[in-house]
Amino acid sequence: MDDVDFDELVSSLTPREENSALKSYQNTVSVSCPACGDPFDDLVVCKDNPTSLNLSRQLDLCVGVDDGRAVIFTHKPQ
Ligand SMILES: [Zn+2]
Image 1 (cartoon, rainbow, N blue to C red):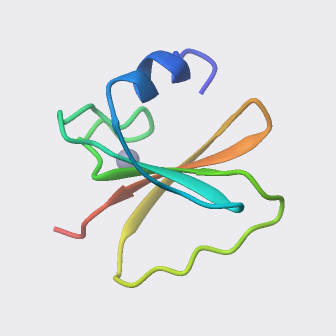
Image 2 (image 1 turned 120 degrees about the vertical axis):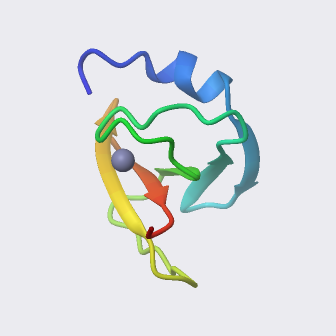
């Protein structure tokens, strides 16, 4: 994600929840996923290393790294 301005991307999103392991944001304005180009649903920043994601639904995921932290873009399966 070298050419992605992550701070700018996050500033367009709505913060949703944060705990000691991760922080999530909702994409309410249909920002395009930097990995695949489709609008993503949520962005999850992993704060712990390693960390577990307890997904309650089946999701397609795109993954990047920002400043040493894993960043996950979730997409609902079509
Ligand atoms: Zn994607």
